[in-house]
Image (cartoon, rainbow, N blue to C red):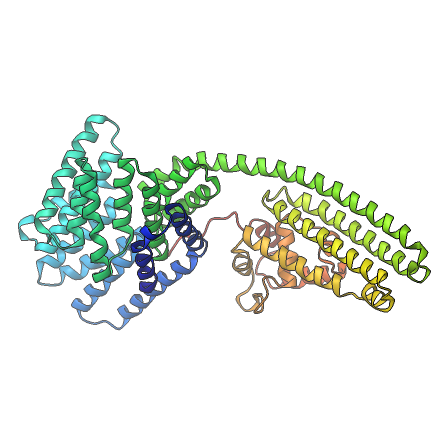
Length: 547
């Protein structure tokens, strides 16, 4: 992770050498990949948490316990707020047994941080008011002032009147000065606070100069790129430089996602910006990711911020998909016309080659084979039209496959024509009687189906295995995407429950499909009806809450 952040920092330093648009596009591609693979980053963070949980079992002294609970709190912060509260309460319990009062004050402030982060501002303020400010050290004082600054900033953002908003903003501004008094000027916290203060005062260029200095501190002390980058994005946004704003929001979002953070601001702000630019698909993906992460984290105020914009982006995204669907239907019509033209051309070639008596039977067999393939293609298109009711996006892959398949037919026809013209009759007979072409196309079809289905339902394998007994679960072999059994139930998930239709679609026998269904159902701990119902609900049910 540190190495990846270092690469991102180096990329940022060389930005003036590249065109700005190409630079942002490159960063967005990195972000796309990060969002798509964010489950891996979540697992990495959870692994770190599990390691700390294991250390608790071997810890005896209160000092060691407090240190581990503090580390757990840091890992749970901006990840799972309920777990962060648990860790903070454990810190309080341990600190109460220790003679050093500062430990207890620090632990209570962690509880206050969680209260504030979940929108319980009153409770958080009550905790802070009970802490004797005069007994806090420099580090705890910074934490203390920062929490006050955070709660008043949030209260200003959600105030229902302009008068209250102005009042809370003034209080937050006062705590900026308090933070600056207790932090060293060479620290990142000082520079971030000063940059925020200058932004509040409208001194944008000065704020940019201060915040850019945070990257030097990052290279020395390995601070996250997310916070200074989103701060710079805010300044550029206020200044009206939306290209720079987008760049720094993207850098911040990459750092957030790759660190396994679930409570953040950069990704959904970037989604809003991209939506305004017309990049609807990215905006929808980023906003949906932000909502899922905020819900996972139980960050209520983030959920409120995101929920206001998500329906707007979602409706626009669906309208875009509908438009693309209509375009694909038009494309299908043109493909059909081209296919008819191709068929006419084949008939013409067939009559021209009648004079070659030796090749007459070969050409007749070729045309029969091509007609059979065209029939299969039409049947496949009909089935895929039915699956279009499940996912509109799926038809795009179907039409692409059709286009590629027609090109392959054309190349196959041209190859046969060349062999006939060259008098290579033996090679022609071998080619026509070979099943390699059909077998290869079937294998490619299975791979395409598996890829498209797993894109629509990326957690299908795991969710399906959760319906089976633990020792009876089915996993694809290395190099496979889906096993034949999983492929059968993938079609059931898409709404195709008839075994005959499944057998035709997958080129299996009906008995084979029946045996697969019976064998797999016997491995489940559910009844037959409940099992099928749960299969058809895969991808719709929200994840189980964290325990």
